[in-house]
Image 1 (cartoon, rainbow, N blue to C red):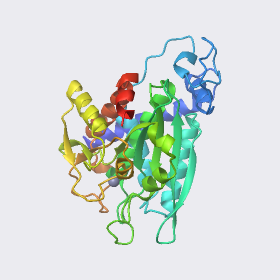
Image 2: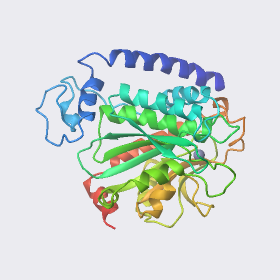
Image 3: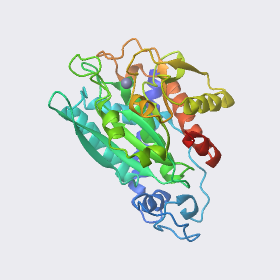
Image 4: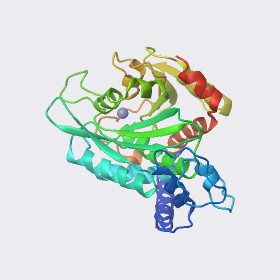
Length: 338
Ligand SMILES: [Zn+2]
């Protein structure tokens, strides 16, 4: 099984390189989508058939040849997991975490995103960073998809949370060529893990990001999904602290049920939450964490890519992608009515 996964990764890696190589051509769909992605105030409908038009509505700006929207590919996600693992232990504020941020930012830029790195201070005197990118949808209402880049020493963090990052990069690539109703904010958070032994010294990237949101931005944000540890386990969950609106988690669970995905709800056991949904949930924004559990080697040096299940990553990635695609204006109205 492991050999098959890595054979698939190898094929996907070659395919990914080929796709990146061809995406620089002016007539490629990705380039058309990217032309729209980097224009922040593009709200007007494009001229049908115009390629490279400066508009956010890339669905109508795609080339004449019909393209079938791509589905989630766990092997492509695993390519990114291996790349992040190769940077080593990505402790919050470390050089390895910064290298991971650069890798992710560069990949998003290659996909056409206007991705940026925002730095924030840590209480131990260090500096960490988030990678933030936006993909305009047919609505101004924002859905945040997040995954943390850092790992807990001595772990190289393949499952926690290379798996979530790999899946989110794969989803970003798919959505870039085929935008959805919500405007999607894609965030790779730094410093999610506990630093310095203080039980509440964690989730720094997400707490910082939420602290930077105006009241208007918060009101315009329909929800936040944290993708954290999706590569190993026997129980598939949507999690919350049960301290904010349940609407998003309930929608995710209903969508999962409609697809036959074996997902159940689980309340966070920690008073401060178990992932980056915490700050959003406490700000009153509907939030959910998508995860598989339990992984006995998380936070250890054994959390390497070889112990991951491509099938688990596929289930979670398909769920998040399908859910985001399923959201319509009525759903966004429900999520923002609070
Ligand atoms: Zn994690």
